[in-house]
Picture 1 (cartoon, rainbow, N blue to C red):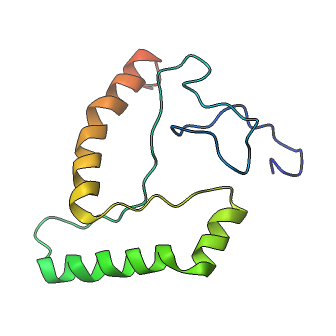
Picture 2 (tube, rainbow, N blue to C red):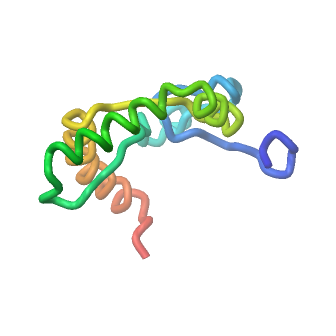
Picture 3 (cartoon, rainbow, N blue to C red):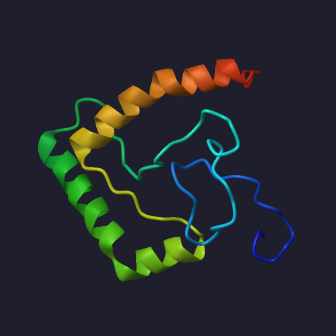
Length: 110
């Protein structure tokens, strides 16, 4: 929709500009203290055996390296940002208070 001109992309949420839209600023560049690396991850309920978690982890990692997947991301103007299981869990735990602050600071709660 953006590429067709039907929508105008005003800003991106990430820490850096997207390669597909180099002229579109980040929210941080526009003065809003909002930025995120937008990693890709997968979650499972607590109690799932470690061997099953490893299967999910390995499948996601392999999929994110697949040329077909990478091409699909490119057509969506998206970029891969893989995080391993432990790294992703720490990232998500750290994001909760940050997202809560964003919601409260900018009045996004309904």
